[in-house]
Length: 326
Ligand code: SAM
Ligand code: DTB
Ligand code: SF4
Image (cartoon, rainbow, N blue to C red; front, side):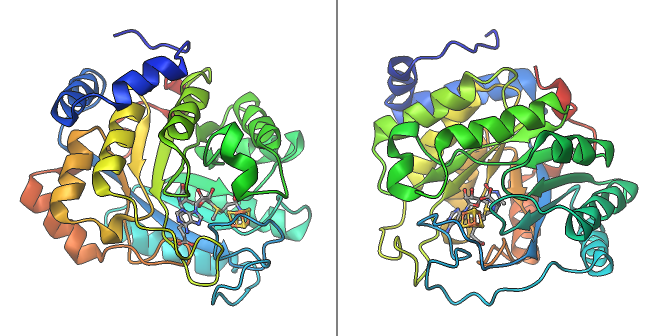
């Protein structure tokens, strides 16, 4: 099937609602046309600047407006970040993602440090991804010059539901940063969260926004809400894993070349549910005991899972270059 950028909500909904075996079969068929089978990229996440964020994202333990048990910290030193990156590489990770709880990327010393971190990660032979909040054009350009592989900036949900989750920034501001990232020649890593209380239509609308981007994002993280005590969404019920499978399948079918990342919420999934996610086209996971502030499966458990499934870790550059995702 050709790569399309004209998806409608009705078309995506029709796919989302297919009988699950049919949906997963179609997704796996698309997957095999565009990706090596049985391979998964291992990405390590590190919170380089934790907590105290001025934004009010209802799901997020790092928002200063929420009451989660997260101690705000300063930006980590370049040395400690690169030492974590080295350990991640030794354990088999090929991508290192650095997250900062900022509304927008800072100028001056802190931003220069982040650029040094990006260069250092690239020198280790790993892909480098960062998520630092909103960027201006100069910052996007500087990150591109430092060799950043991709910038993570999620749209999280539909435009219509966005205001129920975040009030301190708009959906359009999100899109604007993504455009700056694309213009700077950096890969776009953009996805969202399910389980926020959104409807299925909201999920389909989110997919349509992503699948209408030109080019499609080079990677699409699909997060299941991790309800954290002290956040407004602490009592949200956990997502049914089968809904995560549907979401991954729809992302795979609509964005055939993207790396679809099974992201937050994996600790709560059985090995069988994770297997279904891989069948549905997920080909990337966060690897390492921690996401930003919440838990992730142990490295040993993941190594055993991949071995038992007969899956191999994707080696760097064995998949399409992020800027050549079309
Ligand atoms: N501050 C930056 C930003 O918002 O773009 C970067 C860090 S932010 C923590 C990155 C993403 O993590 C969010 O866009 C959201 O999709 C995801 N996230 C945060 N808290 C989560 C939670 N409790 N459960 C699932 N995903 C979460
Ligand atoms: C993404 O979509 N998920 C990651 C990454 N991008 C930065 C973050 C998940 C965070 C889960 C909550 C936490 O650990 O704080
Ligand atoms: Fe801040 Fe990002 Fe958390 Fe929102 S998701 S509160 S912007 S760290």
